[in-house]
Length: 244
Image (tube, rainbow, N blue to C red; front, top):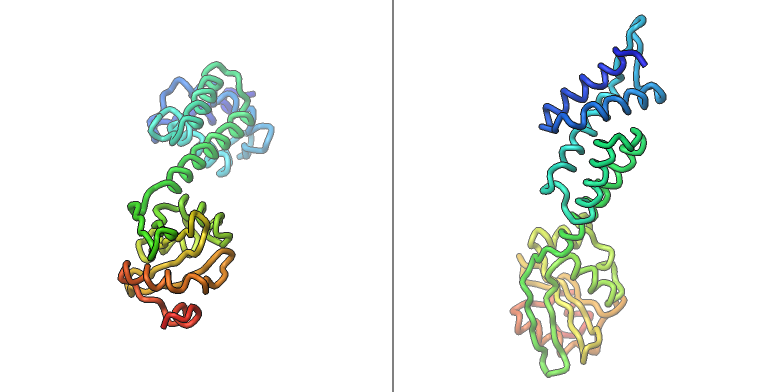
């Protein structure tokens, strides 16, 4: 490999290392392994007899520099698994034990672990405080759904689409934006029904039993609970349940 080829990778890395404030201690190892990698994978173009890095190679080096910076900064890890994995990658780079392909694969795994923790933390963020409302007799208890994790758990119990909601789901978006509130109701510890409230209109959007059934037998309890919460049943819910 020519000195010019090595210098190209080194200079490009140096530029982005400076941009992302990465330590120079990783420069030599990375420039060496990525020079070889780009040669093998058409990462260099040619102008007459001189080589130059392709646009794709430059972008790849830019991303690598950014993620190296993230791995060095514990605050960017988002979780103990990502932290442990980042330190393993950095040791491998410093000790020149990793090829470019291994580095790229490891960075992808680091980002996956990082995102997994972010998603889990997001799921558990409490959007609403806990609120427990006793029903018309001691058999019934209503619990406010407090987080996306709580919504997923409830959806699994009531066998409906709430168990698959992530931040991009229709219910999740309205929930996270504070447009709706949900309560799940249990009858002697068994799932009875779940209802969604439109907070702007102070009216139910839907009241459903297990597997989206219409909870006819709980009509009196539903009417009593909605009265406690100062919420009206929508026209459809009132008609379906006979609580007009």
